[in-house]
Amino acid sequence: MKCAKCGGSATIYNKAGVPVCSRHTNEKITSPKCPECSSPMSLRESKYGKFWGCTAFPMCDGIQKI
Ligand SMILES: [Zn+2]
Ligand SMILES: [Zn+2]
Image (cartoon, rainbow, N blue to C red; front, side, top):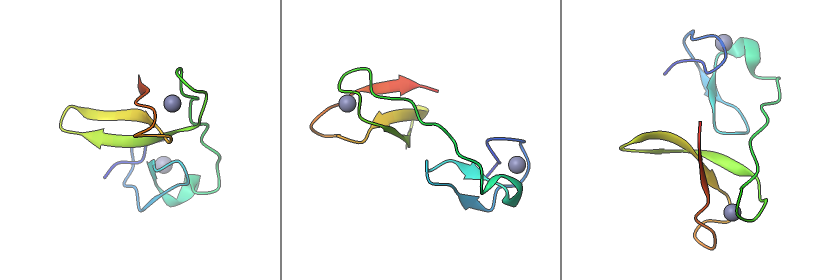
């Protein structure tokens, strides 16, 4: 997997669920807020690619493109 910050080889996922290399593990990645209910969003992956999904899913099905 690739680091979302620099494109290098990522080793872990940060709190937001984004793959990053060791150089960025301490950085905060701000996840967007759900446009439907203002809950924080987490990174999801589907066969169509990655997207932000509402953490209140399945109560809320708000999504946002990356
Ligand atoms: Zn990196
Ligand atoms: Zn929501």
